[in-house]
Image (tube, rainbow, N blue to C red):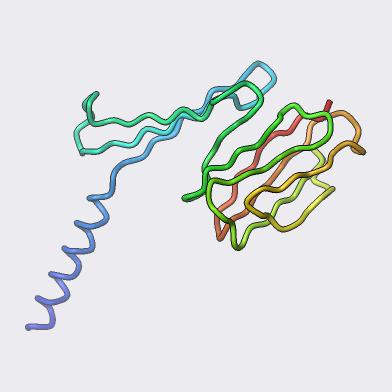
Length: 148
């Protein structure tokens, strides 16, 4: 009987901890070509949506640098569009990170390990649209990269 009460108390504690996490909502804005221009992250500090309990994070800092997040890392991808060197930089050191650049047909064109600042030389690639995938820990994010 005591075992059932202990399990019930643990279950209530776990459910309370899960529901206490702040709700997170993300919205995206795209241009006419389908390029992601803006990512807004809204974090609710309370269960009731009130204007003073919301925090909105805007991913657009300047026109040629897109800032996004992968887990606890802020990722800066610039310049996009690029004519040669594409820079990936992170606000914190990256221990286990990988990048891959794909053609739109899915062929892997470049891949490697990430450092806190990584530069990709795309100058030999033809002009066009590519996909950049960044993986850190078990999290990943994909960007559309334009090579001029």
